Amino acid sequence: MNFSLPSNSEKARMWWIWELFSVLVRRNLKRRYRGSFLGIYWSLLSPVIMTGLYAAIFGTAFSSYYNNSTLNYILAAFTGLVVINFFSSATSQALVSVVTSGSIVNKIKLPLFVFPLSFIGANVFQLLLGVFPLLLVITLLISHNLINVIALIVPLLSLVLVCAGVALLTSALFVFFRDLPYFYELITFLLWISSPIFYPAEIVPEEVKKILILNPLLPIINSIRQICLSGNLPDVMLMLASVLSGVIVLTIGAIAFALWQDKFMDLL
Image 1 (tube, rainbow, N blue to C red):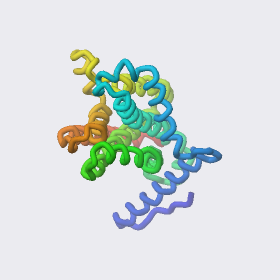
Image 2 (cartoon, one colour):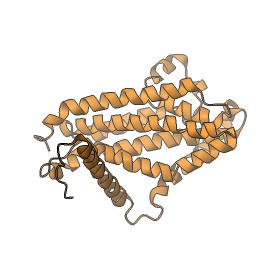
Image 3 (tube, rainbow, N blue to C red):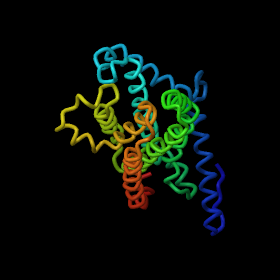
């Protein structure tokens, strides 16, 4: 990659960063799916298979919480899996991005934050071509309202913000703690088990719910399900809760990355 620093113009610099981001996104996609038969559609196949598995095991037991409809349970499980799969895939890939790019940034001065965000961008591209069209169809068939279809963008954007914040935070921490991926597997598992994906939220004890509200993915899952599956107009409060979750996590990640990045070069 041959990148030269642009002029002092802020506009030129922003364009240069965008070009770098685009190149890295394309590189990440090519590396991940080189020789793959289904390519980006693996992102759709995985939640579909897992939804079928959950439906076979829990569908009958939990259908009473979904208007006695196994189909409603299947759709609820699918939307939850879309969120957790995207989060897990995007952030796990981004976690090691700064360290693995050490050979490049030691030769060329580049904005380090672009590396973890490029993995989020690659997964967003995958989401838009794989899962997103199916979510739009489900939303339109159930709600019969274009407002719901458009509103679906809000919690999905919030999901991207959460992933971007976590990517910045974990990729910065990995520079200092190289055993972080093993610990992060536990974190993603805790987020998965604390999100009402394969089980209804109603069965969770009230004492535990007070802790689960710390899960940043919870308001996003609730908002997506309300927009896609309820048949009602979008709940503005749920949408705002999802946006707030995204903004908080992104802010924490961005501040941490900015504070620590001056120390990266000595460790890369």
